[in-house]
Image 1 (cartoon, rainbow, N blue to C red):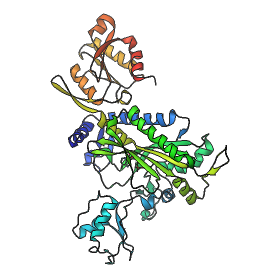
Image 2 (cartoon, rainbow, N blue to C red):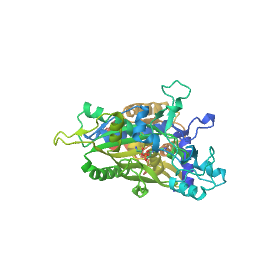
Image 3 (tube, helix red, strand yellow):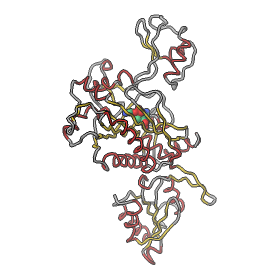
Image 4 (tube, rainbow, N blue to C red):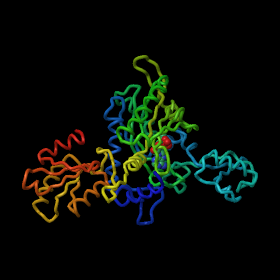
Length: 463
Ligand code: GAP
């Protein structure tokens, strides 16, 4: 993979209706994207598959859909108000806060905003005797700390200076899970060990807006928090690492050589252990999911700040404790991007090039395309319509009678449609069979119209 491939994928996404830049007719809007007709089908297919594996297939995990807005106290308790940020320094004398990169710019030292906290601290340390506080002129600063990534809003605040007491758009979905921990315990039959899963939007004031949909300011997370006895946290951490790896390889069909584990050397404020699953994007290996041992950090913080007891009473042993949490946190947009990059293939067919999305069949935005061989033969068109109407009851289908059949195959290959069904003269005049053409092998076979249902049920699996 290479940078050229990234450009190709970006162009492909726009051309074939997968992803568009936001507000494009107004010149775009940085780090925000929209999903087009095929994009939304693919994204929903990934979302539904995750939900099936994490909730529907299991007895020990329940779902939740909490709000994007929560009490600002949630984000104070969670530590996000104080510790979820990009590099800033504070003057030790007058407590004025300044952006480190801006201060360095003043003395003609270029600081890259993409630098890690350690790198920027090192650079600041080297130059700090030349840097003055813009307010009092002192040269005594704290170490660089990061600028807060939470997106603020004036929801429910009708005063002019609402930003003194803002509400926040959630920076991660899991906080909605922690604050509902007691509700779920009291209203369902879950017992430790158990999980709560949720899919939803999250927002971050990301400074770095690049690499297409990899890092955006609005995105979707698919998070699951597994509540365990503290003595079992390490065991379940390993169980969940294994499960999540299998999901990428078996469920999403990602090539294993394009995946790897990355152990965090520097842990974020809430984590006892953290591993990322990384994918080999056109710009290199980058995180697609984090698996974290969050200990009892979040529940303890919320118990302390809310005054509500969030202990769990084990019904068998009568032991009382705050459960520890093993978190699996995936980005839906990054899952989508991973699937696209892994499936996007250019190959030679005879003298021609074809672009084909080698998606797992279950994920394809269109499952079956139906064609009449010729557009200007009403009897072929009406038979094709009949077949289309029959198949679209169970599968997402597309009817296409535009251009020659070869062109129609190429169009469907590009969006990853696993099967194309063509109605020809043999269908009408001979044996009521159609050709079914396979996207990957490009082989065709004749199948009786009355057997199509059975054929595709076995190809896609019964729902
Ligand atoms: N609750 C833990 C948490 O939010 P994180 O590592 O900050 O951990 C988890 O985020 C996942 O969310 C990432 O692995 C990534 O897939 C996705 N994600 C985070 N920030 C993102 C962004 N700005 N754009 C797209 N996806 C993002």
